[in-house]
Image 1 (tube, rainbow, N blue to C red):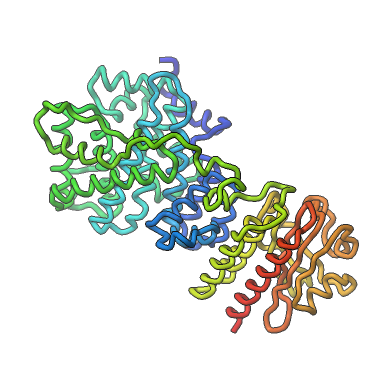
Image 2: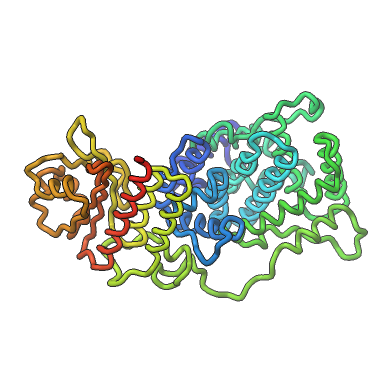
Length: 524
């Protein structure tokens, strides 16, 4: 071995923290953390997601699938609406699954099969989720992510320390042992330690990490949390078996797993096999959403002359779910935003800085329809404003959009939410002083009409910190008042580095109107 046993995990963690292409991006880790809390606001998740265009496209593709959107002629275009439609649990699952899928595209030394690790993780995750639901386990929605995370240690080791990974697999073949046994021998630590250590680096919530060993002999005394660990352990063993080469040994192991699960969880073997098939089918469909070649999930079929077994019959059924390779053609997600009408990836891409189409498509009308639908359902102030800002930023084409609310104690408007480059850093400093000497602000405070401002912003600069205008570098600005009970309580700001076209201005007026309709419906 090239590394001392006692330092292998330390070297792994150091490589993860220093690597330019981490196995889990911070944006995905933040989504997982926020989506695990029911106290997280939709706008917080939407803001993070919109900073990652590939993930934005995947989320919208999922939201527009028949499973979530039963009205295909009315596509879901806003990330805000997609988050609400898909739900926090599915969003958390998708964020981690998307990160794993990207690894299937990376070139590795010969013998390191990242797609195989990822395929096993996907199959195990869906099996754990389906089995947990079938058993009625509490918090079963956590099982998918927890089962995926069970493979993150192996994935990290294969990617960052491929030599060690190959030694582990050589030991598995030579000594005819499991991955866990070979890992302990080569690395000098349990494979679960690697999982826990990698998760800690990315600040994954502890309740998503399943690393406790399973004591199958005391299953009658298990609490719900121990059942979670057992389901994840079983799902990983079944997934590993399905993707192993067919043999008398794998047949025997599979029968043993089904028998153990049947006795432990008091569930019929036939029901278990149906669950395994259903979970495999879901894995194939998920692979399509996150652009993972479903052939990576393909188990090896037994020889046609071999006698039929439970495992072989199940493998044949799973193979029927994998579609034949489609004809080669450009993927909509890879096309320019203006080059493919109707593609969620295209219509939802953030505008390029400084570029605005002379005319707008009807995409912003779909955003307005989503906004109206929300106001008719269970309107929420933060969600309404999030939809307004997102629509102005992504569908209309403004470079930055902000919500500023009046702070009566400080006599100023304070930025609370924003979309666009650098908005995160500007939120802490963006204020507009409530000064009677500023004619622009006086108009916004006394009249229910938005304003369209052009350089120079001499009047406005008297009430805004200089850093804001210097950073945003707008050529034109649109500002609309938010009014409740005949008084202005907030402002919607949108700027552009070029002239605001008439279609953009008309769209801005419509969004301001809808924002005020929603605001007044909440204040009744």
